[in-house]
Every structure is written in C-alpha cells, then in structure tokens.
Image (cartoon, rainbow, N blue to C red):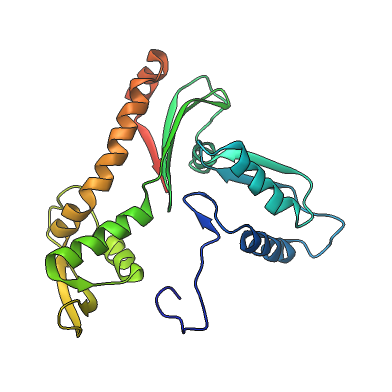
Length: 232
C-alpha cells in the first residue's frame, strides 16, 4: 500500500524506531490480532513482547499498557537480541558468551548473552529503513530521479550489498525525473547500491566495535571462537 493509496487513505506506522509512536493505533492493531488468536475473553493468552535494549521505562510502560488494554494480564518483556538468539537456536542458559546483532526495521540491537542474561548491550537507530532512505537519496543525487520506499526496498533485497559482489548485478528502478517531471526507468548496479549503503552499514559496524571494546575478556574469547549471530 505504501505510496499507492488514494487521498482518502493514509498509511501510518504505529511503531517507529522500535517504540510506539501512535498509541491508539498500536492498541487497536494488537487487540485485532489477539482476537484472532483467542476468541474467548475469559482465557486470554500469555504474551511475550520483544523490545529494543535501550528503550526508556516510559516506552516500556506504553508497550505494556497497549497490550493490557486488550485484556491480557500476563505480559513478559524481553530484549530483542535475546529473542533473536532463542530463535536462532542458541542455548542462552550456558555460561558461554554469544554475540547477537539484530538488524530490524527501525533499530539495530546488539548484545552479549550469557547465563540467561545480557552482559553488554547497545542499540543504534539505524537499520532497514535507514538503508532504504540512503538508496532513495543516492539515486536522487546521482540521477535526478525520485523513487519510492517500496522501490528502494525491492532494489535493496535484489542487489543490495555492503561488500563488492563477485559478479556485477543490475536492477531496474522506476521513478520520476525531478527536472523533466516525466516517468523514467534506469538500471542501477550492485556496486552503486554498495556506495549508497556503505555509510549506514559502517555506522552499525562502528557500534559493534564499540560494544566489543567493553565486553569482558572471557566472553570476548568465546565470541572470537564462535563468531557472532547476525539476525534481522
């Protein structure tokens, strides 16, 4: 629907950068799907919610309030890297350091997990949406063509990279020429997208390095042996 709606319909995002930006809509969205899961108002399901590492107590309270308003009484908040590690099949209860980097839509969360808890964690508001914005700005600056978010997302999925590919790939994007005002299609290469994506990608890399800098040596030794888990 993004970019394809009539003037009577607005596409909104109740969640922005990993936190609730529109409380009423988030509340309605959650209650809609909870009704699909459980038709009974007596037996409501227990809910586990993953949240970014560095959100404030006020933002956590907003998440709990939005879900409890649908009738749920048992709510458990867990950090996104912990949920990602469990989803990736990592044994988080072991006395062993596991480094998880979770690149979402609005935020990138990273954490070193050991003994069912987070030893070190950090978060940066740069993720999938920032990559899309970087592609849109790059194509507008280089070719004078304005493209939409959906087109940028498709191009990113098709040929996006942060390291040169062995075989150069191309993708056709369509948009409006900002000077002529006419529709235009052009072919972009994977190297061009790498040029667009390298800056936000390097910001994530620098944050990962900063997190590793403050990780205890014993846990760092485990990470050096096993590598890190990249999810998103």
